[in-house]
Amino acid sequence: MLIIRLNTSELQASNFPEIMYPLLFTSCLLLLPLLLIFFRFPTGLSRRRRRRSYKLPPGPKPLPIVGNLLNLSRLPHISLLHLSKQYGPLMYLKLGQIPTIIASSKETAFEILKTQDLIFCTRPETIVFSKFSYGGLDMAFSPFNDHWKQLRKFFIADVFNPRKIQSFRRIREEEVGILMNTITRISSSRKLINFTDMALCLFNNIIYREVFGKRLSADGECGASPHHDMIMMAVSFMGGFTVSDFFPSFWWADFLTGSRMKLQRCFRMMDELYEKEIEERWVSIERLGRSPPQDILDVLLLCLVQKNPLLGFLLSRNEVKALLLDMFFGGTVTTALTTVWGMTELMRNKEAMKKAQDEVRQVVGNKGKVEEDDLKQLHYLKMVIKETLRLHPAAPLLGARECMKDTKINGYDIPAKTRVMVNISCMSRDPELWPDDAEIFKPERFENSSVDYKGNHIEFIPFGSGRRICPGFALGLAGVEIGLANVLYRFDWTLPEGMEGKDIDMREHFGIGVTKKTPLMLMANPVKFEGRI
Ligand code: HEM
Ligand SMILES: *[C@@H]1O[C@H](CO)[C@@H](O)[C@H](O)[C@H]1NC(C)=O
Image 1: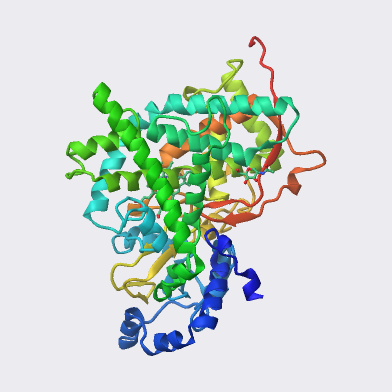
Image 2: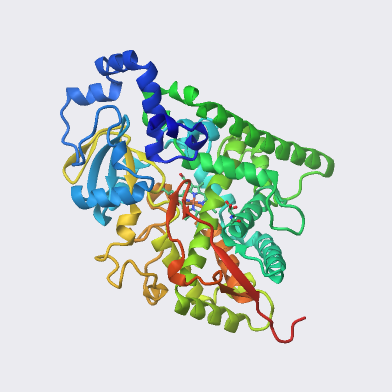
């Protein structure tokens, strides 16, 4: 049975348990002798732990070799939620060879993200991350060091600042307009809209334009392109795991399973795409001279030749490429999946849908489209998005962190180098923290509430908190808001024949973000506005 499941093409997008199959397979066949050696000469980490006895947080008993990997399902955040009911708000698990603690309550999360942020704000090194970040040269996967601090300061000031975000307004409005045309065209032939596909396409094009100043899809379309597929493949890599992520001393297994080769191929394709865009831009700068930075590529390329005061050093070409990758990994799937979950919840909750549509139609009137200036009046829509982020956070385990030095939480020892996860699914559906039907989609709960997502209300941190909080949240939300607002304004939406809200498949898929497992398929019915042609 193990061998039947051994399918290397599954590996890159696979979740925890699948990691086991190739590993067990290879270790059974080839590696008994090596396993013996491995047990005789434990890795540095376990040797150190043996010397000093730590009082570790409670957790399920690990098995030899695989540790607690079998305690996790395809939806690790859900498995960890169940485990936390048994073992408490701070657990210790061994994921393969990786010692890991999981915080599952407001108090333990606060301890990690706020009180002891300085000890927990580095990222672990994994094969996939270090490949795509050109060895940690980016921001998202970089370890905590001065280089990261300066990059982050520079990015927040020059890329994610409100003025820059505002300057991309045209891009978002135009792309949403193109999407509206595509939906109108599909709906006129009474075909179903693949909403999942539309959302991915919208945000891929928006980010591509914000970064490179041009669209990804063919003109006038919101359809796929070869680049779109390639970016999606690279993105799916980030959500997968390779054997060596959990079994660093089995690094060679990645070669046996072929995942190292696939990773290399995917990385090379992305690298070539970026090289091409950078080269093209250089040529046009040489020909036309340098104008004030327009898109993110301009901002970054300027730092190749001119020392940015916030950075204090010149960027290298690899750093530029690593940062460009962050934009795609951080900005496309997260925003698209938030939009899809938002729409899904509205399709299940007729009253919320009606309220949201009434609001936007009343605010915008007969204008024919929602523009960004209208958004500040759409209070209910903003609550819908908040409620979506509460129930469907894109990254329920946030970004992986690593403990930098020995410390204590709740009286338990946390040894240096321990992997750290914060499971926000535990807090965001906790009836104690959300007294008003925590499991139910109720945007009204945010009415007259001061809870926001800026990292200060630990019960609601879809963007993380502390030093590693998502720097792109305002940029991302700007797209989600304008996208959803227009979708609700321009069309009435129905489910496929014979389907009701309660029939919608709500299953999740855990990859780079937690997406809806099956695509959201809807009928769109364009709304006629009086006085408009
Ligand atoms: C709805 C949209 C988004 C959600 C839900 C989201 C969520 C997150 C989360 C949970 C983290 C990890 C925080 C931690 O580890 O504590 C993160 C980090 C990050 N996000 Fe976002 N994000 C979104 C949009 C964006 C956008 C649009 C961009 C950029 C174009 C972006 C760029 C980044 C980067 C660079 C990091 C790494 C920061 C660091 O490690 O210093 N994100 N995001
Ligand atoms: C819908 O779009 C998604 C994302 O592009 C794709 O994976 C899926 O196969 C599509 N499904 C249908 C039924 O068109």
